[in-house]
Picture 1 (tube, rainbow, N blue to C red):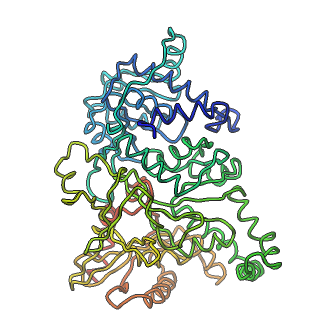
Picture 2 (picture 1 turned 180 degrees about the vertical axis):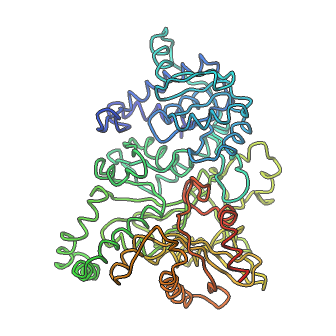
Length: 582
C-alpha cells in the first residue's frame, strides 16, 4: 500500500491518464466539461510549484474555504504533496466559528472560492492573526486594503506564473505515513469544534477497507454534492472515487441536484438520509393528489419481483422514479444520520439500493457499512475488515484500528480521555450487534434525555417516528430534567395546504398558522397515533408547531443535517417555556 495520499494519487493518475477524472459545469456554456487524470496530475504539479513559491512548507496549515469543485481537490493534493496540512472549512460556518478555527490551527494561507465566502473572510479579517495570504479561485475585483495586510492572490495568475516558470524535475518529498495530513474540525452538535488530526495512514487504511466492502469500478460515475469539507464526502465521494479510477461529477448545488442527476446519470451517490426523505415525501405528495394514481401506485408496490405484473409496474411506475435519479444508480451510500428503514425498503422496491453506513470524523470515517450482497435495512451494516468494534457494558460503541485519529489538535487532555487503557476509542454512540453481526445505533450518549422522574429516553427514536408522517417535515424532542417530554414540530406545509384544499378549508400563509386551531387539531390526532408506539414516559404530552425549517444558515443543523439541539433550544426558548409553564 502507498504510504501517502499524493503517492496514491499520482500512481492512479499514471494508470488512468487518458480517462476522465472530473466533470464540472462550465458557467458560460452551462454544459459539463471534463478534466482527465493526466490533466489533473499536471494541475496538481503546477499548484505544488505555486505553493513552494509562496514559501508554504511542511507542517504549514492550508485552509480550503470553498464549495465542491475541481480546485478543491487540486489544492488538497498539492498541499499534502509538500507536507502541508489541509484544514477544510464548511461554507455554512458562522463568523465566530470561522475566526476561531482559522486562528486555532494557525493557518498561513487560505483558499477561498467566491465573492460570498470572501465577504465572510473580509468581515473577520482583523480577528485572524496568523493568516498571511489569501488565494481567490474566481476572478474578482478586490481591494487588498480590506484585508488588513494580507496578501491577495488570484488562482489563475498563480497558475500562469507557475506554468511559464522554468520547469524543474518533479519529485515528491519523503513523508511519513503517520504524519498529520489534515485537521478536520468537527461540526459537532455541542460546544466549540474540535480539530481532529488525521494522517495519511488513517485515510488510506480506511480507503482500502471501504473498497473491500463496497465495489467501485473505473466505469462508475459519482455525483458529488455533500460538502468536501465533511470527512464522509471526502473519503467516500473523493478518495474512494478518485483512487478507484472512477469519474467525479460536481453538482452545482443541492438545489440543482434534481437537474444534475438527470444530466450526469451517476451510478454511485454518496448521500445523507434527508435527501431521500425529501424525494420520498415528494413522490407521496404527487400520488396523494390523485385517487387513480394512488390506487395504481399501491397496486404496483404489492407486486412481487420478476413476475409479469411486476414488469408492468416497473415499466409504468418504478422506471419513471429511477429516471428522476438519472436512471443508472446502482448504489447509494448513506451516512451522517440515521436512515429510516421504511424509506430504504421503499426505494429498494424500485431497484434503488441504499446502503447505510456508520462512522465518525475521528475514524476517517467509516466504521461499518452494509454491503451490496449482504445488507439489513435498519442497521449500519457490519464492521470493515481493519476495524475492531466492541460494545461496552454501558452499550457504548468502542473502536480500534488504523483509521482511528492521531488525536485532537492542541488538546492532549481530550485525546487521552477519548480512549480507554486498552486503546479503544470511545465513539459516544450507543448500539448493539444482532445475531447476524449487523450493528444497530441507538443514539448519542450525550443526547439521551433524562427526565426529572429519572426516566431515560432516546430522542432520535421518537423523532424518527414523527418524521415518518407526511404532515411532519422536522421535529425535536424536548424533556431534559423536565417532568414530561414535548416536541417542536415543523409541519410539511405543502402537505398541510393540500389537505386543507381537499377539505375545502381556507389556507393562508399570511396568518399565524402555527396557532390555527384546525391545524393544531390535525397534529393532535397525528401525535395521539404516534404515542401508541411508546411507553407512557416516552409519550409526547405537548407540542409546538414552528413555521420555518431548521437550517444550516441558522446553525441549527450540521453539514450532514443532524440537529444541533442546544442551538434549537436556545432559538425556541420562548416556545419551550410556554409548553412547560402552561
